[in-house]
Every structure is written in structure tokens, then in C-alpha cells.
Image 1 (cartoon, one colour):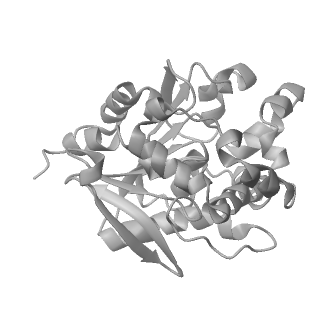
Image 2 (tube, rainbow, N blue to C red):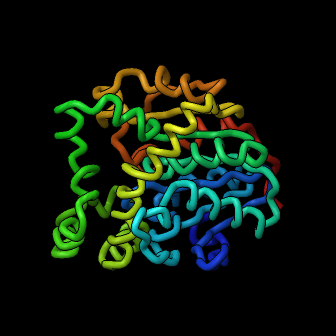
Amino acid sequence: MRFEDFVDERIRVGSLRLRVRHAGDGPPVVLIHGHPRTGSTWHRVAPALAEAGHTVVVPDMRGYGQSDKPVVLADHSQQSKRAVADDIVGVMDRLGHPSFSVVGHDRGAVVALRLALDHPDRVDHLVVLDAVPIVEHLARCDVRFATAWYHWFFFAVPDKPERAINADPLAWYAHDRDLMGEQNHDEWKAAVSNPATVRAMLEDYRAGLGIDADHERADRAGGRTVDCPTLALWSARDDLEALHGDPLTIWRNWCRTVTGHSLDCRHHMAEEAPAELAADLLGFLGGGHPAA
């Protein structure tokens, strides 16, 4: 199966239409991309999961890719992880899946966490890739973190990030056509060349430092944890572990049962280590049944 063979449709959830690609037959799993990617970042992983007997659902998050851009609100809540998580639940309702596993990378991992916390009756397994909760980053923020991840704070500034990125988005964002794959790269290029998409992606970060962090602090104060089995994977050649130590130590404060390890790749692991990632996901999620 090829990613191009997935059903590619627009699914209305509330006032928005989301681009969603899906295929397969078996236990459902949602793959949620990060910044600045679209669902096509999973183009090498999603078919492997479908061929192994899973129903695989790959959305573009609201604001990203070819999904609709919500109206910007003063508190940035239109791009909050809670709003995006609710979108995913709506998509899965429309596709007829009362429960599912969720895999999130980067910003998508924070959405996946919010899904598992807000909708524990819907999420069977949680997988978080190259991420820890937002408040855990902020609690450890020092000069090293602020220098390496300066974009978190720059993106929170009104208007100036849009001007900087839209002046030359292909120069702003690192990209490698050969590594990403031609179709994935073309889709990504179209997305980051759209000022409305850039604005929505920045709103993701603005929500992150505000309303999303508030939601996570409320989780901590209320003692809320993820009940379902959790897998945390991170990139050995990125800086998450160097900045914060063992990510599993952090995730154990949020999840009742968590396992994981690093992969020998850089940040965009679905593009750099797709076979290894797919194998780890199938080992954790279990086999489905052969697709019809």
C-alpha cells in the first residue's frame, strides 16, 4: 500500500473542515503530525501500519496543511491543544471509531497528551514522540533551553514572526527534499508558503505558552494522569535528552504506565527512521488483522 492510496477527504467538525487521509481495516490509530509539517510526514509509516492490520487515520491539524484555519481569538484558544484534541474526537466519531490509539509527534504529541487526559474513555494507547509536556519545558527553562528553543518565545511576539517567516519561508525552515520525499516536500512547501497557515502555526505556539500551559497546570493540581499504556520515543540526535535528561523520568509523572527509548535519528523521526518507528509502534500497539 502507498500513502497516495489512502482515502483523502475533508471531514467537517463543527465549523471547520479538516483534511483527513485514512486506510486499512482493524484497530484504529490516529497519527498527529508536528510543526511545521502536515499529515504527509507519515507517508512512510502510515502504510506500514495499515498493511499490518490497523485502520490508520492521518489528519492535518486545524490551521495546518490543507485543513481550515480557525478565526484567531484574543486568548489564542482557537488553536489550543484542547480544541485540536476535540477535533480528533469529532473526526473519529464521523469515521465510526468509539476508541482508538493515538500517536503524536512534536506539537502533535502535546495534542495526543491532551486527548488522553480529556478523553480517557476514547484513547486505548498513547504514543508521544520527541516531546514532553509544555510545563515541563517551562519549568526547566534556562539559558541553554531559551537559546536552543528561542522560537517558542519569538513566536509569542505579535506580528513580527509572521513578517520574518513570510519574507522567505523556504529559507526560514530547514528542509531536505530527498530526506522528506518528493510528495511530502511539495505538500510541506505549499503549506509553509501560505501566510494563513504560517499564522495558524504561530498561534499553536501562542496557545502553548498561555492557555495550554494553564490546562496542564490544572491537570497537575488536580492529580490527573494518563491511564492507558504509554510509549515515549525520542530522537538521539536531537536535543531533548541533552536539555532535560531522561524523558521517561518526566513522563512517569504524567502516565501510570510508560516505556520507551531513543531512536538513532534527528527530530523528524517519521521521515528519518520510518522502518524503526513503525516497528516500535507495532510492537507497542500489537498487530491488527490483515486488511481486506
